[in-house]
Length: 115
Length: 111
Image (cartoon, rainbow over all chains, first blue to last red; front, side):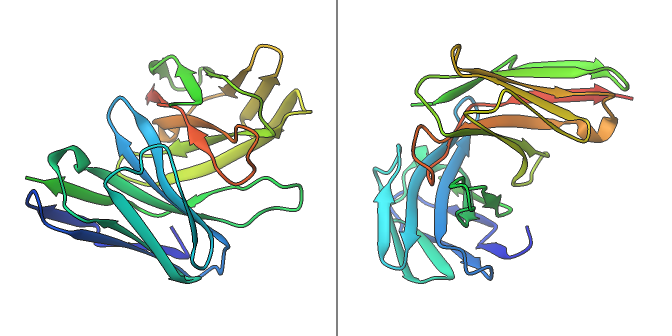
């Protein structure tokens, strides 16, 4: 997980409270991603960023927002957490390779429990 | 929706045996990647195969790609207990920077 740090690593919160997860990279990579991993669903893309202030939605973006004000930081916010957002959240980074393929480097994950 | 689907969902073998996992996907791709996830950890990239390649090797890993069938396989030869992990295929669906992952195959290698 060198070069990419997620915080907090574990969080328990109550329904209706706001939650922000932080992803910090030291690699100066252009692309950053937030995925969630749930049993039976694998990894699903929530949001991604292709540059500072440039973000777009993934397949499960409802209930989530993101911000990227600096290259190194990508924040995922749950405005009002629900129990269905209990999950393990992974941040990933990538730098486009010369032949156009992006290989992702993942963080260690943030386990969020919403009671 | 999931672009890739791995098969089988779970596989249990003895050390020294070969392990084969399959991935099927739905739309055209530029490349297909395989990742490994050890329990409680993030995913780690293993190997990438481009759409114009049919086979690729890396150490004990062999990946094949059949774009006409929209399928790929990952072969791990001479498996070790340390290979115990979940394995995921990831496809780009024609978009170079957005990957979609399957649900994974849980491989257990018994000593």
